[in-house]
Length: 412
Image (cartoon, rainbow, N blue to C red; front, side, top):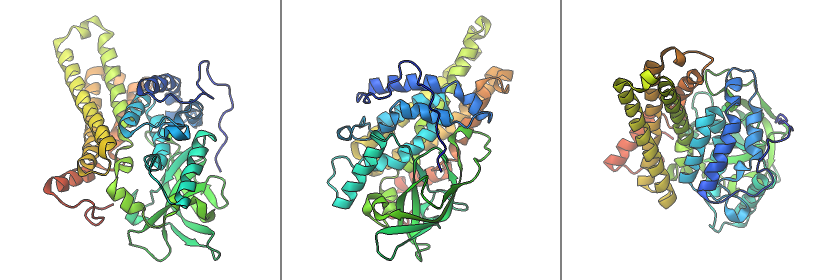
């Protein structure tokens, strides 16, 4: 069951209760304001002295849950490119909070992109229900896909479902190994396959409420970074959900949707890790600037110049990937761009961290300084899907003209 969030009053100036702005500059300003409130919580959560639930209360009350929800449904209607920029702003202040927040948007992003597309009645009802929960109920969603031994790859999903005798509900049974926002989210989008279809590509998604009978979570994993994502195992013990909570009312299409439009699974994290890399650079720059002798050193100036160039290149690639998704999601060029962005950001963050250690010295390893946490956080970009070798394989196959819309062409 989801744990209660703090009911303490919001800081002065909070936009709670007001509609989200819809222009990107205002949303970036809101993200900057919200990030400034999240920043002081990062060290406490990382050290295990806080659960991190307060960070999600701040995000919830800032109204940011509706960033992607279409404007006609009350959200900001932000596209993938704008979202990546907002996430980078949050990530520069609090990396773990940005990653956790991303899981909410990974869970609902593809549905938000269906705005303006006519749907069958059951799918339209589901879409309207979810948008209402996010905008008016301020509910947090999360993704529950990863399982032991297969990670987030849908072909490896062992969680199963079966229809009830009357066909009005489904019963879901299984275990998830790495669920972010455990005990924080109100709903979880669970990947499962029909009983007896092991090894097939027919995977479905269901919305499971945190307080549904049979839902349970283990202890939050003790992680060396990103403790604030509140990540834990999840047990689904014959959880019954109504047919109305089958994602878009369609069974068996999840893998094929992912193959066609992989950007949320592959690149949703990228903005957060770009923000973490930004924070590493800023700390290093400020460390050098704090000493006139260091600031006047041509050697350190060149080191900062190298860091700045690497960061600028990664930022440009993330922005380009987002623009391609917004212009034509599902296209080969767009899908290749998000894989390239994920790979490059995953390389740049740790590279900047190594530069920071060399430049800052003891300031990089002191637990009293934020850089030590940032170094650990930056290194984990390669753990999140898609992993570096998967990104490179996809890019290589794209370059060779392999049909990447074939679900068997890549290990999904």
